[in-house]
Image 1 (cartoon, helix red, strand yellow):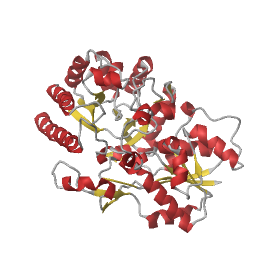
Image 2 (cartoon, helix red, strand yellow):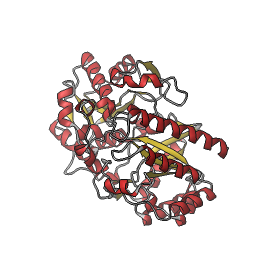
Image 3 (cartoon, rainbow, N blue to C red):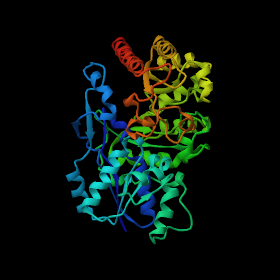
Image 4 (cartoon, rainbow, N blue to C red):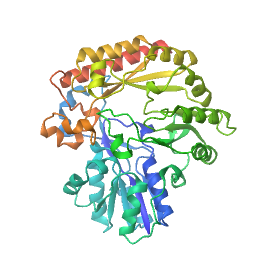
Length: 441
């Protein structure tokens, strides 16, 4: 059985390259190879090409802001052309095609790709990923070209799917923590941050916290589980030696939750003769409640240079209303210690949660700038498969428009926050961050 796994193109106002590494596809590929399938990966987003497109009518309200120097410059299609994708399919001649459908706002691109493929080939198509897990029934209604919808992590969904196709997979699904993603299916050296090769990886899955606006629990559960230390180090060493990887980006939702595991990991990386000198990042943001001053020095020794933290908001009542843990009581001391060591610190806040006011958001950001850190302004968007999604009071025209499920849409207005205020706060954050960067330099 020959299976082609595709990371599809997408459309948006911007792309963040470090977020585009197709890690989920590589886990799926490993599971499929373990079942005896011949697998190829087509990453339509690398190398990253873009072509300007008109702003969709559903986001037409943003067109007047495109002339602002701190706003988005245009709307783009990112990825390979349809012609190139069809040629790659022709070259591999697969029996099945799997398309990653992770982000709800980008499903339109997934559906369009499925239509393009079906026009050329009578090939069965399956989709998997976070969006496929959140909206399986709705996908069936929206796309007749998608034949199978796989829910949950690859090691749980693929064995059953393969069995339905008459492919024996063994007695049980593999343990995710023992699976090594099939990185050899990617072209080595293509994934870069600046002049350095990078790869994304995870050391853990799941999160025990119960923030109402988060859907991690739906995909990976509330119990956090870790790969073995040797498993993670072997993955990193292979990337370092085979693909000249020098930056390792951890996409964990709560990498530092298990303090004993995290401390042992940091020590092992710092002492490893191969990995010494590599850089580590945790772009999803670490939870400050799991950190203190004692762990910062080992993080620095292991290769962390950027510290990304998630604050959400300074307001304790807003936090409590969404079951977000109270902030680390030594938060300011943690920031001071990190800056003293040389960390470049970014702290993320949410702009536009129902119940927030413009004054509260501005106060949270101003507080962080007084601490001398950059503010990551995360504009609130509809969070599929989260507890908040069920009770979110929004107009049906917005709820039913999947293309608006993104920060860049500024789609969710509340009684306290208009779209104009959301955009003003976003621009305020960008302006203040630019001023701070100039001071840091």
